[in-house]
Image (cartoon, rainbow, N blue to C red):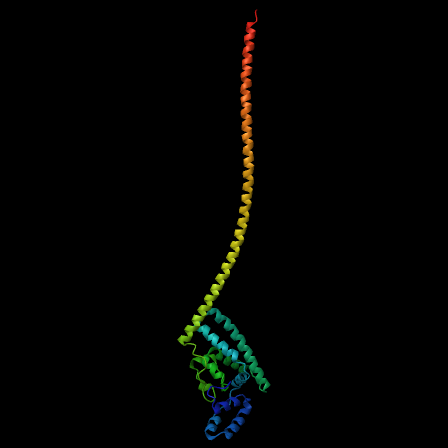
Length: 282
C-alpha cells in the first residue's frame, strides 16, 4: 500500500523496502544513479530497514494488514464509546489477529531467504499491535516504507518521520476518532442499535408472556366449563332431591293425619267399650 503523497521518491522507497535487507544498498544506489539529481539526493539518503521493519513491509505488500486496520478503527471506536463488552471482544480478537499476522510476516521473510530471529518476530508483533492501537502508527505502517519497528511504549511520542522513509504519511481517509461530530453520530447509532436490541428483547418477552397468558386462559376456560358442567349436574341432582323431599314431606303429612284419625277412632272405641262394660248388670 503506497503512501498518499505518490511522489517518485516514495514509490522508489516502497519498492526498495520490500527487498531483502542485504540487497537494499546496491538496489538503492542503482535507483539513485538512474534518477535525476533532485530525486537522487533523497533516494541516496534512504537507510536500510531493520529486519523486523522489512518483514512488516512484506506484510503490507502482501495485503495482510487490511483486517488489522479495520480492527484498529473498531477498537478505537469502542474505546471512545467506553463499550466494555465490545472492548473485551475486540481485545481477544486483536491478540489472535496480531499473532496470526506476525506468523505470516515471519513466513514471508523465510520465503525471501531471511528467517526471523525470536527478537525480530517479537518486534514485528509489537509493530502490528501498535498499528492496531494507534491510528498514526497504522498510517505509518501502511506506507510500506517502514525503516524500523514500532513499540507500544513510545506511541505517545510517536513521530512518523523517525520510522518512515521518504515523506511522512498523509492524512488518513478516516476522520479523527476524536471528531465530536463523528463521535456523536457513532454514539447516536450505537444508542439506536441498543434501543433496537432492547425493543426486540422486550417484544420477544411480551410474545412469550402472550403465549403463556393464552395457555393459562385456555386452561382456566376448560376448568370453568368443567365446573359449570358439574354445577349443572349438582343443581339437577339437588332439584331431584328437593322433589323427593317434598314427596316425603307430603307422605309424612298424610300418614300423620291417618295416625291422628286412627288415634281418635281408637279412643272413641275405647270409651264406647268402657261404657258398655259399665252397663252390664251385676
